[in-house]
Image (cartoon, rainbow, N blue to C red; front, side, top):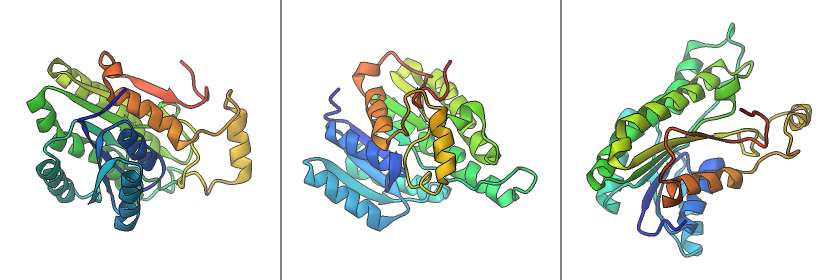
Length: 247
C-alpha cells in the first residue's frame, strides 16, 4: 500500500489520531502537510517524520477560521504542487446536557468538527479534480452513529460528517476521487484521557475485544483508505471500535 508520490494534508495533526495518521502516511511514502493550531507540536512532528526518513511540512491552522483554511490550502498547494489525500481529523468537544448547553459551545463544535471539513474539501477538491485522483477521509465517531448523552453537539457534528462523506462520494466518484469516513470508538488520546476510571471500565465492558483502541489502530485504516488498495471503496464508514457498535 505504498503512497509514494502522493501528497497528504492532515488537519488536527499535532496530537492523537491526527498525529498517528501523519506518521503512518509518511511511513507509507506520502509527503505530508501537517496542520494544527500548535506550531511547537507541529515542528516536533515534522522532525520526527524527517528523522524516520519521511517528508513533512508544517502549516499552522485553526480550521474554524475560514480565511485561514483558504490561505493555508493555497500555500500548501503552491509549496507542494498538489493535494492527493485529505484527512479531516480536527475536532473538539464541549460536553454538556442539552438543556444546559450554551449556544456558543454548540456553534464551536459544529464549526470545528463539521463546517471545517466542508471548507477543507472545497479547497482541496480542485487539485484532485485536475489530476483525476483523490482520497478524502473524514474522521467521524461511534457517537455520530449511536449518540451519547451530554454530547449532542459532538454527536451531531460527527453524524453530519457521515452525511457529508456520502454526498461528496456521489459528487466526485466519476472523477476517480473517493470519499470515506472512519468512525473510531473509544481511543486512548488526550481527548479521552480526562475520563474517570469508572467511565473507562464501563466502556471496556461494552467492547468485545476487551481493550481501548490506539491512535495507530485508526491510522492504519486511514492509510488503507488512502491507498490504491481501496480504490473501489467510496461513501463508506469504516468502524474502528473493537466491536462496541456492530451492524
